[in-house]
Length: 404
Image (cartoon, rainbow, N blue to C red):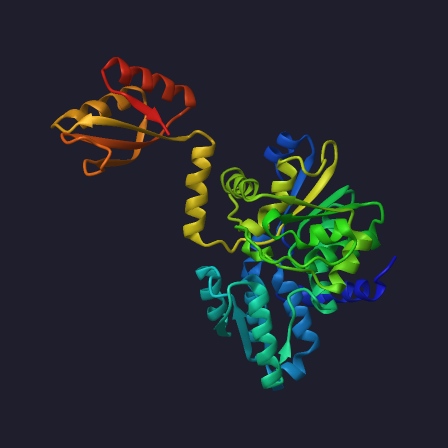
């Protein structure tokens, strides 16, 4: 088996990382097992300290460089989770840490990073732009740059997840892992394939940032011109030579999922498993639920890599999912702008067992004739058939509404 030196570090990291990191649950999901006809277990790194797996690689790396980092400090670039991992690990070592994050990073991740005591620099629109700035600062200050994935020690720290999964469930057939730059899946695949060579390891990327997937298929590193995905934690323009080499040799396939599939997985994790998961952390489940990875009749461990989601984004995902699930429905119609008209419509809505979420009443739009108003109502319904009955009742009472 290749990469034995990193595997040796993974075994060493296992005891060191446990000083701060939780041995997170490998939780069986009856719901997802039933939906996929496989036996689905979720490795819940979303409940890890700092909210993601990144504390593992950061803590192990800083523990090996503690003396030099105490003198010169450390710096990194991150969209958020690695930032928090480095900030926390540096605080444990009583060392200074500077984090460069893209300007449009999650407010929750920015605040958490500052909360762990790091100095924050916001620069650029993407991780790659932030990384270039961090390297410039590192050269100026002679501080230690801790790469989020292109570092054997970081990879080793992340690989402790693979040891935990096979310790808890030795007969796993498949492990599914989110992929950005590839540090997480590199560590897990080295650990898993050394322990159980016949296990299948699959990576998952967002279609709007699929640099590793393209590289894997073409057999050479591919750099994207731009990234565009809701999964900001894995929005990387290109993998490193190290992670690509590991993945090319040890990973069985890298598949992609789109943002709609990702948001559905985030919603399902929240509603069915009561787990708050960020989009990047949910891509593995998204791939399994969408059938991109065959899990029928197999024991499958899916790494849920992080839970640091912006609450406003989570709210939008929930609302969007309600519409997709036909639990929220929007209807609109033109009414005479007279007292009692809206009351009469809402009486009919109540009889049809619709629950009003919001109402918009517009009498100023240019396409509405004077004396009339356009009413748009968002309703919560028990089932979609209730809407058909509501539309029939409205029509019978002389109101013409359309379902948007």
